[in-house]
Image (cartoon, rainbow, N blue to C red; front, side, top):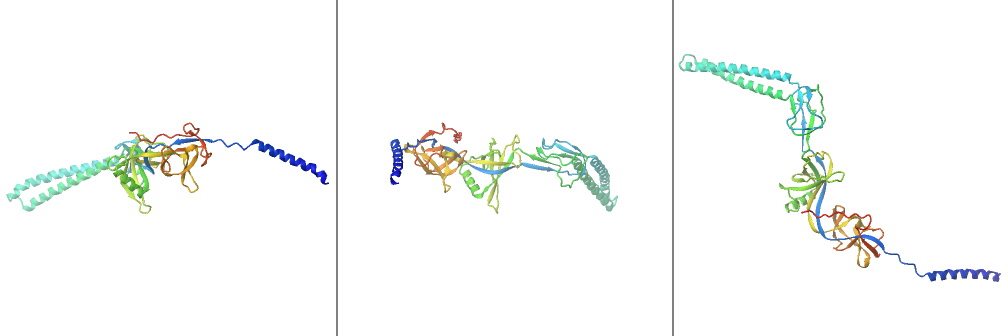
Length: 392
């Protein structure tokens, strides 16, 4: 039995020796070639520092038009939603009863003026007679009293005539300000009253327009100090220049002013309400829109900017970057960032001018690896943001 098993054992040993001999003859496995990564060389540059404040637009002026006399509405003299100017007629209330009241007041005044003429002539006639004792003092005093009564009647008649004239003028409802009209709440034939709470139409002035923003009081105090120190672009009267970004992310394109004098502090939240004023000639901004006001704080002369793809975060949440050092070996740096400027990070610590930061192929590179650095402008899929150096 033992002799029959030996040939099988010899075959297994030979096969194993052959396999070992083959592996030994091939030598060690080849090393992995260096991966290609896109890098950006960090250079100091002038960086405009800005603060973005969320807010909403609000009307510059709003006028709610109500009737000041009662009557039947005869005409609507404007097109809903169109622009109107101050003093433009909007509605016509039936003027007939007010014309009658005006004519009646006018006639009453004329009657009082006639009575005044009679009383004045009588007083002038009695005056020399009472000095000559031709008439009694009582008769003259009655004439003087009648004259004073007639003068009072004339004054009352003039006031009544003026009131009638004003009420007649109120039958024409005018626009108190220039602006865009809302929908009309009434139509021809409606009965309106002087004491009604329903608004006939609302006129909203859209140019200029306000942007109301809210920020903690600490930020407001910092902005106020920066304005006094000259770090903010001053527009006079304690106002700073401010830009605007619309809800869809586009730039508004017109510069406004931030009014620090129109602020109130909410005692419950400690927040400050700021108001910026923007020109709005094309009525692109409408009340109630969500926007972001951007305030330039100043210029950092030696700022270091790194594209966002080049900055990641470690397990502790700290910002880190991969830097290609000597011998094209990758090393990891812990950064201290200030804020995002456009699509770049402003780095204040952890990098120095001339460092090559990996911005493309970050997932393929690891600390200690040797890589082949390629300028990010030549690497596919890497966007090089525009410079942030302010003009002028």
